[in-house]
Length: 398
Image (tube, rainbow, N blue to C red; front, side, top):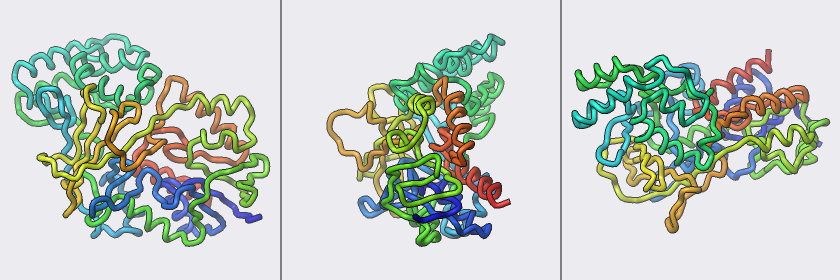
């Protein structure tokens, strides 16, 4: 039996950041278990057609997270990153505009601008109407009927199908306020107004895929990281994993559904885990160069299987081609995915807050902590996941 203070499940951004920060703080009694043969989780990259391809989808480092940047640059110095001003677009049926939608209505024909302005002015949130509880109605209440029907609802259906009507509204604070005044001002001035979107400026490696950062974090752990080591059994009472590793505390960054059938979990908690929902994503590569200066483009049209395209030749020097992100539920017959990611997006269903709270409270009473996108069942960018991991490491070593 290998006994350690901490067993960390999963070597994605959360697990690797936690482990490396523990080392920095002088804690060496831990081990990281990863089921894949390579670290990085959804942020892994591999070489495809002579250049790195991010096989978990598009991931970028936000320049605003200064604590994260200071930590990341220890493994991959700032000189190895290139900073970009974000260029992302939305491809609608008849024209293409820059993202975010509401700040770039001025790029549409005048008649369309007028229709959108009237729609935004009449949106429920701008008319003082009560906020609805249903997801689809909330989107219309927040954005107006035209933006809802042209973009937000069809786009979300493609990512989250068939679960759209199961989603709650508690997480939609991330959506910007659509101000009639800001939108009108942008149309008159012919430039965006209002708040900048996430990753308005971002960093991406000059020579590598995004996964290179996490490979270096993994290398720094040495033999404390065990690859090709999936969770096979977990005795909750003794905190023994795979009949081999025994911990004082377990930090899990893997999906809670991976515990089912492998651990001594009471029926009520298993029931809560079964209520957690997620969707998958396939990454499909195309070798030709696309005629666009966009870093990535959103495609809400229901006639297309994919929802986003990332043009790696526009953010990785010397690369060619692009990749599509596709919910497998929407995949057309034919085509070949470079990589299938079973766990891509944890879904913010209406009952998720109560169920994940129940799971995490039960777990914490047994010295088990859920961390990151899957441990907390929350869709978070890698910089947020790293921030949470750094904070936890400091709490554990006080």
